[in-house]
Image (cartoon, rainbow, N blue to C red; front, side, top):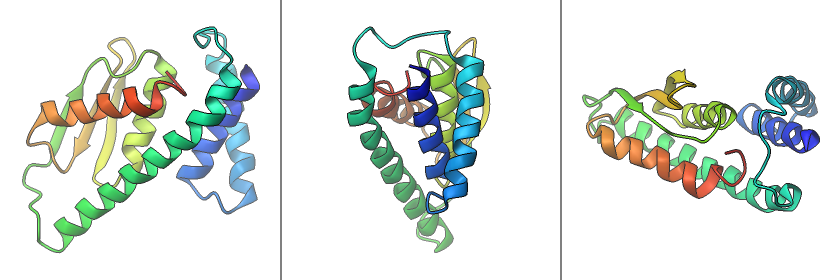
Amino acid sequence: MLPVHIAVLAALFAIFTDPSKPGTWLVGLVVGGVVALAFGGRRSFDGGRPGLRLLVRLPLLVAATAVRMVAGAWTMLAILLGRRGWQSAGLVDCAHCTETEEGLVVLGLIESASPGSLTVGIDPQDRSLLIHTVDAGDPEATCAAVHRFYRRHQAHVLP
């Protein structure tokens, strides 16, 4: 089980940095190994065969993250071109985001990978994210989008 966790974390690291360079994958394996060893053994998947599920669901998580990044870049472009205001920028506290601390860290990384959004704080006890976003005018909608992303895409890979 631990090699699967290391591979998932290495892939996420490489995707968020520079997947075209082999050195990035090597660093991702080291970082993934350290994180997996530090947090490994605290939980297991729901008893099924995680390898096959991860093999199917991980590309879907990566694709959903890429879509989120493109949408964030589009929003930032609209703000830079003056087509959209940025006056509603601010902090949003989203509680009960994930099932595990590891999932919370990964969700925070995914949220920060999207332009216009940055994870400012993580509360492992409450499993909440404090997010600075350019669109904080409706905090409930922002939190709903974070929860929806987690349920649809990440919960199946890294709960």
